[in-house]
Length: 175
Image (cartoon, rainbow, N blue to C red):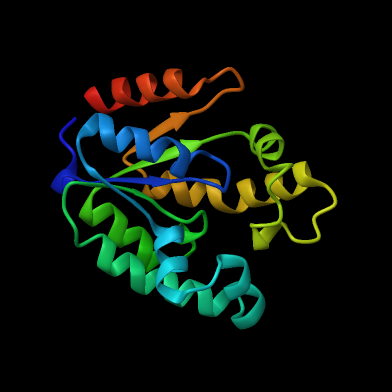
């Protein structure tokens, strides 16, 4: 598959592997890698968690949208987006119109297992007592938005290794 404008935008829930898989995938595809959340943190001088705590989610989403407008204007990149970027219709349109969108779809069970040790850096997980239930709720809310936005869907499984997932994504992109 020829990537629109040479861009590959990775979307999915937190813990789906957008950043983890995006960087090696960008090397394989010979493209620059950008992580939207890391870029936002660097530019603001604060963590995502601090932005959420101090300014709220609405402020964070405005900052995220402004940054996305800039990042989608680049060419030949792999972009790991934030998990909630698809909540705004304007963001979904920008992603679809400026690149090829790949949804990294993982079940709530996989996500809960991956994120069990990583709640502290994820504001939407603060105070979560039932990680699996929280992941199910986010999945129900967002899966349809990811699928509406995506050109391609990569269904992850429990047995995926990093190398196996990267090979499967390459195969999906080659079609």
